Image 1 (cartoon, rainbow, N blue to C red):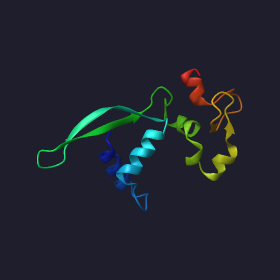
Image 2 (cartoon, rainbow, N blue to C red):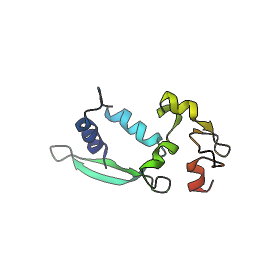
Image 3 (cartoon, helix red, strand yellow):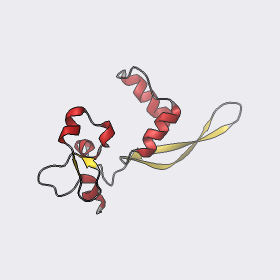
Image 4 (cartoon, one colour):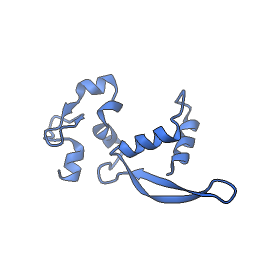
Length: 113
């Protein structure tokens, strides 16, 4: 999915007061470990000018189903309640929600860190 397609989905969901601009959306996608860049698409921007847009996808190495999202989210995107439940992973030192029976966060488990 390209940035423009993502903005369209966000706009149609009606859950946002303001949508992120192209630069901030690109920065958020690039910094999120749940998202990977899978290629490029050439889009016609008018008058014969083509621009290269990055195509993003969910990182299927660590996200197997929707329930995995909460365990892989960055600390800065967690709600206040989730932040209080999060702990630092002993392997990667990132603050994540870790189940009691797990020794490390889901990202470290799936990537074998």
